Each structure stands twice: as structure tokens, then as C-alpha cells.
Image (cartoon, rainbow, N blue to C red; front, side):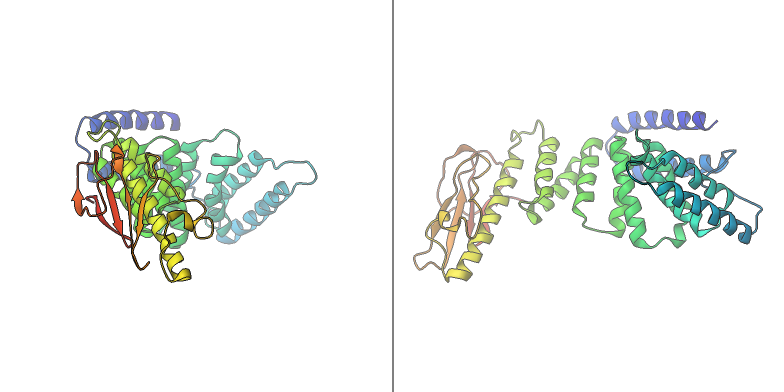
Length: 346
């Protein structure tokens, strides 16, 4: 019966996905659809004959606590390994399921409910992402009013990972919304959100997210991942994919600018050459995205500087350029005293 319910849900999801791809992207429609899917999954879990996550019992709480204490001791015994033995995770999982069915109102059952997703994700060999999702979603549904925000954030983080591994971009977008509502600005979740938006057709919003990461986190792991996603967002763009190269170059210029400021604090002036920064103030001086050296000029008194890239065509037209532009091909980038004065429009 459960298999049939899941088969129907999967068929419905496939139909919806086909309809969605045929229409302009709408985050609101995706959210509404995912809410309905979530409620449908919870209703199916509650309707199961031998319900696990929503089990009911006529036992008193005192009797449940007695049963729970015995099962917890069994779990501890099964988890305590010696020498080269390994934990029998299947046996531990069975005891946890017994806790949920026989003593559902106990704190031990609540803890087991939370822990079960880890078994389906990592501990039983082949991951079962559908079961892991059901475990986490039902935990959130059942204990919604008693879960601290930090644990909710952790649950949504894992649900994002699960949705991504399932390649369900609609679900991924839904859970990035849930996560960011509690923990705004998390760069890893923002990258997941951008990835989902690109897959679903929300390219413009994805680019805004990625550009913000590129501005705020030059040189970081998230910066490099954002560059990769930016290239995916513009595989056949009119600028030939140069937007990612310009953003990468601006990030390198900001890294150099930071090193220049530290040098100035230490030496009371800016260096005569960029090579003076390495290795004390920067490990190595980066090149721009086209593997060309940056142009640099310190002020006559060492109290200011200009830094520039010749852009995609490699032809530098001078430090005096000012303003912004949208057509990238052939344009230079100029920074003066850590401020961009000639660069792509944001």
C-alpha cells in the first residue's frame, strides 16, 4: 500500500515537473506545490497500517517509560563495540523503530525519531533518500512547536542536502527558503538556492545571489563554487560567458587591494610594484581571469594607487577611464584606492 502511494506521488511529481518546465518560473507556484506535496507525504505516513512516525498507543506514560528504558539499554549494548567489531546498524535501527511504536510519547522516542535519518543517509550502506526525508519531515511535523530554532536549522540543512542528492530542484528551493528564513545569509544554502533557481529557470535571481557571494567572499570556497554556477547560468550568453571572468577578476583585484592596505599600514606608503607584496603581505600576486598581469601605479608620494585589468581583449586603455558598462567584451577594469571606478554595472 505504501509503495502504491509513493508511486502515485512520484507520477504526480513527474507530471508537475513537465508542466513547470513548460511555463515561466514562479517561486510562489513552486512553494505552493511543495507545501501540497509535503502535506500529502505526511497524510500517507499517518495512514500507514503500522505507522512508525505517528504511532499511537493505549499504554500509560509510566509503562512507556519502562519499555523505553529497556530499549535504550539494548541500543547502548548494540552500539558498544570492541576490537575489530562493527556496530550492527540494522539491529540498532530496529530498536529505534520499536521505541517509536511502543513508547511514542517518551523523550527517548523523540530522540530516536531525530536520529533515524542518519541511518538511511549514511549508516546502512546504500542511502535511501526518500526514507531519510520522510524521517526528518515527520520529525518537524510532529514536534513543530517543541523544536528549538538551532535544531530546525540543522534539519532544514539536511533536507537541502537530501533534495540535492535526489536531484529534486523544486524541493531544494523549498527547503532553502525554510533554512534562510531562520538563518539568513548562509553562503552554502545560498549556493544551493542559486543552483535550484538555475535548474528551474530563475536565472536572474540566481545571478543576483551569485554576484553577492562573489562580492563578499573573494578567495573562498563559496567564491569558486559561485563562479562555476555563474558559468552554468550563462552557457550560451551573448558575452560568451565572460561575466564570470569579469567577476573573478574583480575578486582578485579586491584581494590585492586588501594586501595593499596592509602593506600601507606597515610601511606608511603603498609599494612601488605589486611584486613587493609577496610573500609577506600576500602569498602570490594573482593574475586576472585571462592569465594576464594586473597594471599598477603608485602615487608619486606613495599615498595612493591605481590598479587595473586589460579585460577580455588584453588591450589596456589607461587608468583614467571612469564609469560603468554592461557590454563586457574588450572593456578594462580600473580600481583606485580600493574603489572600482570603471567596471561592469551591478
